[in-house]
Length: 177
Image 1 (cartoon, rainbow, N blue to C red):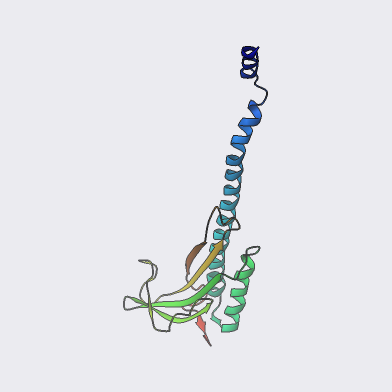
Image 2: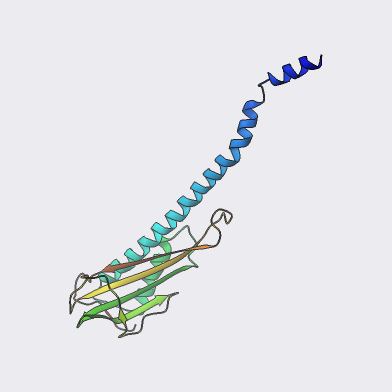
């Protein structure tokens, strides 16, 4: 009788699917959560890149800007980041002119980032501008905090710098920066 019970239990396969599911479900759920979080982080990074491009583009379209105009453009950058929180979005825009081989800051304004000192030097990509030419430099950083801290612990800092030449003038001026 005892051998018959063992033979009957070893031949029973009714619970195999449930056991396989119990073993695979946590792995599949973790993959799903990880991909969801990766997509959220990627979207935040792409939006932050759009912020830097938009800030540079809006400044480069103007002949002259004011500090208030730049602050309004920074606010637009915050709107681009929605639905992500903007408390860790930091922006800076500067006008830079290459003179005698070195790139010097003409004016700068920051929101959450310190403005660059007028006359200070900045490193530009090689062959971006020649002597006497100007470029608008928009720098943006964003600290992304994962909602699933167990998947991506701590903050992930994204940063992007965008360079754009002024469109209508040789150098975009700021009257009160």
